[in-house]
Image 1 (tube, chains in turn green, blue):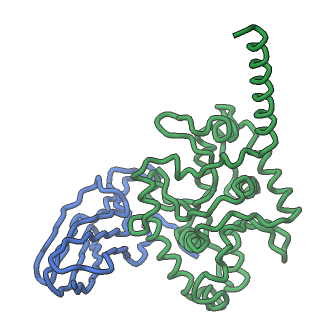
Image 2 (cartoon, helix red, strand yellow; image 1 turned 30 degrees about the vertical axis):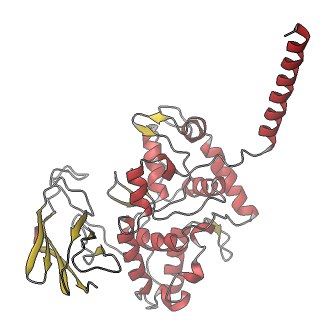
Image 3 (cartoon, each protein chain N blue to C red; image 1 turned 90 degrees about the horizontal axis):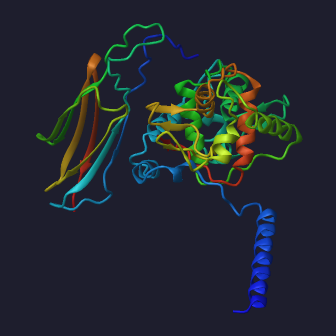
Length: 263
Length: 117
C-alpha cells in the first residue's frame, strides 16, 4: 500500500467520523432513555409485568374501592361524577402535574385528587403519603398504563419545569452532588451493588421492595436527598412539585407503567 | 381524615388469587395467591425508640373441600404482602378454600369454585 493511498484512507476515515459526530449532535439521541424497569434483573421485571404477582395490584384494589365510596359532607363518590370506571380520567396520570385552570396553581395527581376532595366532596385532604392517596393514584396510574407521558403545554407549567431542571442540576448536601451527576452522567453504572437508573418517573406510585409497600415520587426523591446528605425540602414545598414537573417533561413520550416494582 | 396514630389502622383484609381460566381434570395447575399484610417482624423500633409489636401471618392452609392439600407455617422473615404459588390438581368439581391466620386475630379467607373439564 502506497503512502498516498494510506493518506487518502485516513482522510476518508476522519471525514466519516466527523459526519457521524455531527449526526449525533443533531439527532436528539434517537431515544437513549430507558425505564428503570430495564435496569432490574429478570425476576423483578417478571414481578412487575405479571399482574398476578405484582404486589402493587393489592393497593390498586383499594383504590378501586375508594373510587366508589362516598366521602365528605357532600357524600359523593368519585364515581358519582367521573363514572363507575376510570375511563374518563384514563390519561390523568400521564398529564400531571398540570395547571389548575380555576386557581392557576400547579397540581400533581395527588394534589388534584385532594383538590377534588375538598372542593367537590367537601372532605379533608388526604396526607401526602397516606395509604388512601397512594391507592387512588395507583388506580388512576394503572388506568393510564401504556400511555405516553404527555405534560400539558402551558407557559406556567414550563416555568415550573425550568425551576425543576435547575434543581436537578443543583449540587446539594454534604456529598455535594446534583441529581444529574448520578442519573445523567453515570446512569447504567453501579452505586454499590445497584445499577443507577436514569430516574424516569414512569411507574409512580411504585411498589418498592425496600419499603415493602407503595410510595410516591416525593418519597423517592426524599430518599435521594438524604442519600446525598442534604436536608429534604419541607413536605409541602414547591421544590417537590417543580422536580416532578421537570421529571415528567424529561420522560415525555415514555409509557406509564404504574404500579411499577423497584428493588 | 385518616388518623395516623401509633396503632396501625387495619384496612379490610384482602388478597389477590389467580387461577388458570380453564382447569383440566387430573392435570396440575398453578395457583397464585398474594395476601395484603404488613408482616411486621417485631424486631423493629419506631421513631420514639419503642418496640413495634410483632404482627405476622403465621399459618396458611389450602383446602380442597374437606381435604387439606397444603399448609405452611410462616415466621417473621417472610416479606410484607406475601405471595405463594403452588400446583394443585383437582380430580373433579370442588371448592378451593385458602385461609390465612395470624397475630392479633388476623384471618382472611378466599374461596373459589373449581370445575375442571
